Structure formats: C-alpha cells, structure tokens
Length: 146
Image (cartoon, rainbow, N blue to C red):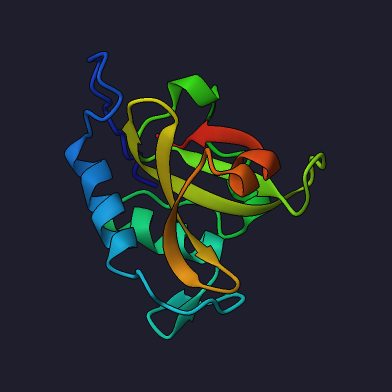
C-alpha cells in the first residue's frame, strides 16, 4: 500500500490550496447537477460519500466509502479553522449527533461564507454556504482527511 501525503500551505490565508486539493475540488465541481442516487458513484447519479470518494481518488487518496467511516477518517478540525478540502458532516435534524450527510469545503471567504459541495437528495450535486440557517443548524463536525 502506498501512502499519499498532502501538504497544506502554512499561510494564514485559509484559501491557499494545495494543487492536489484543487484537483479534488475541480473534480467534485465537474459533477455539479448530477442527480442524487443512493450508492451511486458516477455521472448518472451519486450520493454524498460517493462524490467525495471519486473526487479524492482523482488526487490519489482513497477515502472510506460511507459517510460514517469518512467521519472517522483524518484529523478533527474546528469550524473556525476550516480550509478547502476539509470534510463537513451533518445530522438529519437540528440537535442530533448521528451523522447522515457529508460535504467538502470548496472555499472560505470573509465573514460567514464557507462554501461546500455535496450531493443533496433533492438537488443532486450542489454547493451551499455552511453558515446558512439550515446547514449550520445540522452541522456536527469537520475532519481534515490529509
């Protein structure tokens, strides 16, 4: 087994993105509009964890296949330390801790503008703001997989 090492910029700019993470993000974005399909990992349909598996694989990192396993992969990250490429995990309802959904941070801008990409059951692959009332309310934790 070959270990893949990602290096992160040490700059204070949280948007400084390693070229491999840029590959992961551009791969995920190439699936924008792809419909949701439970267990799917192709342009015909994909689920949230499948989107991240194929996106990271393009950059040489194999993530676990399920959201539950992905939520244990890598290192914990505080919300105020999020960077592009970090995984963000959500529960089904506000106040719950059971993780049912995953996305990946694509950009961190000034203020409360943290964009993430995911496969929504209703809208397919889409980017949203983590600080929106809905997503911020069901946010559980974040992990850095590299």
